[in-house]
Length: 211
Image (cartoon, rainbow, N blue to C red; front, side):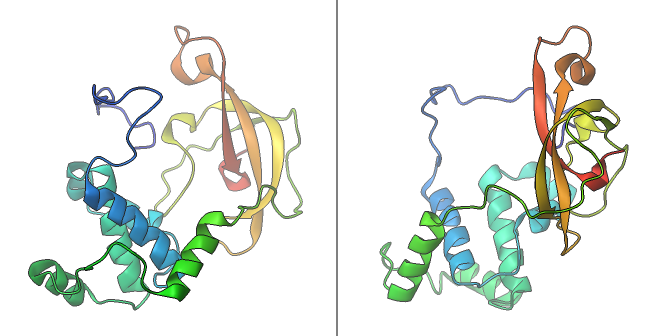
């Protein structure tokens, strides 16, 4: 929720141990995760599902569980990618048509694509770009209310921190060209007040969020 106030404490499931939490609590949640991987591996949807999740109507968003939001975002991305229409999704949900009869991957090409997707290594450094700030610079996060997809937590907006690292250039969701990303160190007291625990929080932020 980006650090918004008024939503109360995080409720932990007492049956989950702190170091051994269950990734899925119901079978459909694991299938949703599998669909996310499979549709990405096969190129069946357009872009990330996160922007689609953020576009869910607020009341529906708040009433949905974590993986329900994933499922809604995945559906929207499949429709945007032209793989299915909303009417086809509704018809399949109502009739059960197209329901898998086996949990095994019967498409060798799909199985190979999924293995490649899961075993592939993500890049750890960005592209060379001109950075406006350097390590040790003091920066303040802009006060803003972005309309589209963003990666700037609400609770750091307006707060001043220190550049701890320059992570190279990465494409912002609203732009194709890479933009400098910085690891910014925020003192806990600057974020939460004088009664906060000692220490610091490090957050990676695009240059457009900083001044």
